[in-house]
Length: 335
Image (cartoon, rainbow, N blue to C red):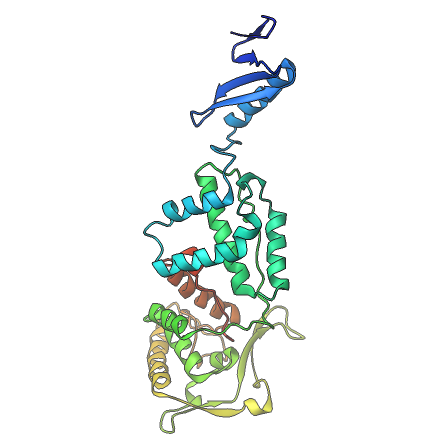
């Protein structure tokens, strides 16, 4: 039982210090002895009850004094140990020291708010840093706080709902040679591999790819006759979205596209694949679209959503083996 300076019993866990402040104490869920102070015994009791409640509801952390700098080094040495390559570590350190440390390094994790992080991303944009830099800052902080919550040094992740929007006009998505290699190594042997290969080797627009039929291919002259485009839209008179075979985008889009060896092989493979798909009992081609070369597994036409989803499947597979900061960004059929 604790006592006041005048010898009055204060109850278990309480006592009065020489400076007059009242102190309450308890062991939290981490096994650490916590001390709560108040100017009056009533204030100390209220604060202690609040602290015990927060501990019971897991609203507290093991260490609320840790700064972002301190956590960054622990995160790097513990959570990224043997996970990232030396070159990736150098990249992490460069991003942290240049774009994160100056603003947040000395701040405690508990004091860093979503509004401050959003403000930092806005500042980067105003300074001329593009989507890639902004998103790397976001992803680095996101993972650091995810691990901080996991290790009970942060209550919540302030980065969780923050997104960085790519400015397509300023920064068109262009795949590097390395990204192209990764993509085609991963999609090799998959259902839409031939579609992707013809798309990248011919430069055809997505709608032109979807519209290709056997008569459009001239293997003797090694050219593809581009004369039409397939779209999936709701036109006047339609009750819902449906497929429409129409003209190409412009008059100049009527053209013969050279067919290189890789494109030729992919087209011939696709013609064989088409026969297999069409021969299945589950295949139900739409009337008027029976001769399309590129179709779904059910021999139905392809639209932009199917195309994008097929790309995302490959990108997701690539990212399974990549660290968060090295993630392969998805892209569209137009890219």
